[in-house]
Image (cartoon, rainbow, N blue to C red):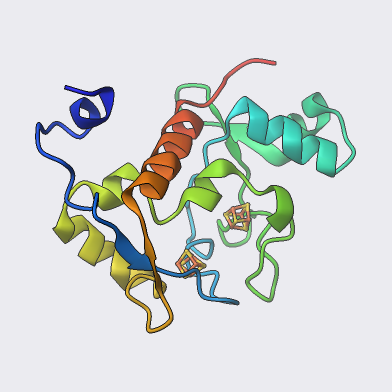
Amino acid sequence: MSGWKRRFGSREAPWWESGVNFICVPDCGRCCDEPGGIVYLSREDAERIAKHLKVSLKQWLSENCRTSFDGRFVLESKPEDGRCIYLTGEKTCSIYEVKPAQCSAFPFWRENLVSGRAWEKTKELCPGIDHVDAIEIHGDSIKLNLEADRIAEKGFRFI
Ligand code: SF4
Ligand code: SF4
């Protein structure tokens, strides 16, 4: 069994392997607009964002991140509403060009793809799924997103 199928706990090809319909709807931002949302960071994410903001990795982590219960770095939230510190008033991302891999990979997260039912549930949050302008996203692209999300969720703890 491939590592891939093992992670999904199945010998069969995953239900989404033949593709799903999706487009990220401009000016939507709903997936960022969740109080209490957690964005895990890979080391590459953190280095890329710190470089973009022209601060040291250490400074960026101490001023813009916190740690999860088990010590992984996650993006900080705004104290007033629990939303991501990089979400603007217009519901856009102020670090869009360098945003974390988990953000780029959404909605192709494991928990959303684990079953057709989970995907249908994700549709309630993400209007890009089966949107009238959606395009077919092939299974290979979905796998890349899932892998990026997996690595980011593993996170990192020390600098
Ligand atoms: S909720 Fe879906 S359509 Fe909206 S910004 Fe997020 S990924 Fe794009
Ligand atoms: S970093 Fe950007 S894309 Fe990611 S949750 Fe925050 S506002 Fe959204």
